[in-house]
Image 1 (cartoon, one colour):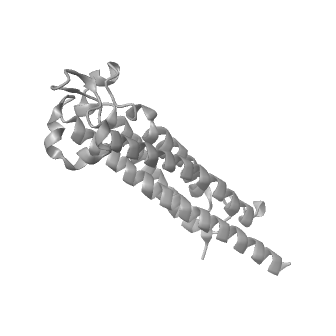
Image 2 (tube, helix red, strand yellow; image 1 turned 30 degrees about the vertical axis):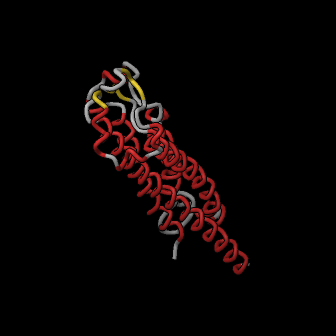
Length: 199
């Protein structure tokens, strides 16, 4: 089995997931498609952490590009076997660690965003607050309390949906990068063993 083909497959999947993370994080900035809340700084602090754009997005695009660059036929470095199959596969492990960091950041911030809840204008306080901070995520199952947030309209559903999507996407990215770490180590060790046998 060619370990490079497996890496390319992981790379294409990471590419799609990273683009989805960027889109989901961008949507968090525009509740109900409105731009005024972002310009007035009436968004949750976890929205502004760019966890989907930087973490699950650009930091995952780096390993995706590296994995896709591995040639599918001979497992060499961009089609050149001379640069060492084993070294290339082992270097892909470093790229996978970058993906682990990015996806881990995305998972962490998404979980914190879900736990704290949205920043909104409430009819009780008549002010912009985090009304669900003390619930430690319990508000997720208390749908009757979601109406406390008056502005932005449906912000609880908006945040819960998008943070949940980012949490799942980040989790899948994390698993794929972990798989590539194992694949890269096995591919590198296999390449070293094969080269010793040829000698």
